[in-house]
Length: 308
Image (cartoon, rainbow, N blue to C red):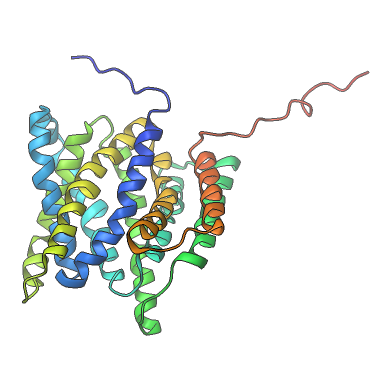
C-alpha cells in the first residue's frame, strides 16, 4: 500500500495541537502528583498511554514494525517518557506549572547542542536567532506568569535542576529517534516507547503507591494526561520528527508555555495581559525562525557587480 507524502506545511497543525496538549499536561501532572506522588503519577501516565496506544497500533497493522524495532522503541521510552515525566512530576511538587512549562522551553537548546555534538550539525544564523528569540520570549513570560510555591531555596533549586535534566533527556531522545527509528511508523514508535516506559516505572510505581486512595479528581487528571497528553501527543511528536525533523519538532516547547498561560486564564481565572500577548508574539517569531518556516531573505545588492 502506498503512502501519500505529508502536505506541505501540514506539520504545523501537528505542532500547534501538540503544544496545546503538552501545555495542559503540566496542570494534570501537578494535580496527580499532589495525591499520587511523583513516581506513581509518571508511572500511571505511561501505563494508561500504553493501554491506549497498543490496541490502536495493532488495529493499524503496525505490530510487525514494532517487533522489528522493539529494542530501540522501548529504550526510547525510558529517555523520552519515564525519566522526564518522573523529573517533572517531582519538580511540580515544588514549583508551579508555569515555571515548569517555561523551563521545558529549553528543550530545543539541548536538542541543538546534542545534534551539534552527535551529528556535527551546527545551527545556522537564522535558526540560532530563532532559538534565542524563543527563549527570550518564554523568559519574559516567566517574569509575569510563573514562580515558586512555598519552599526553601534548596528544594526550588533541585526542582529547577530536575526540569533541566528532563529537557536534556528530551533533547537526546529526539536525536536518537532520528538516528535509530527513522522510517518507523508513528504508532509503532509511540506504543513501543510507552510500553518501555511502563516497564521501567512499574516497580517504582508499586513501591511508592500512596497509602490513602487518591480522589476522583486526581484519577481523572491521570486519565486525561495518559490518553490525550501522552497517547495522542506522542503519535503527533514522532510524526513531527519524521515529517519535519527533530529540530523543528522540539520547537513545540516554545508554544507550550503560551497554552499553559491560556489554560490558567480559562480554568484558574488568571488574567491575560498585554504583556502575555506580546510574549506570545515573540515566541511565535522564534518558532518560525527556529523551525525554518520563515527565513530572512538574503540581500542581493552585496553580491551584485558594482556599476562601472
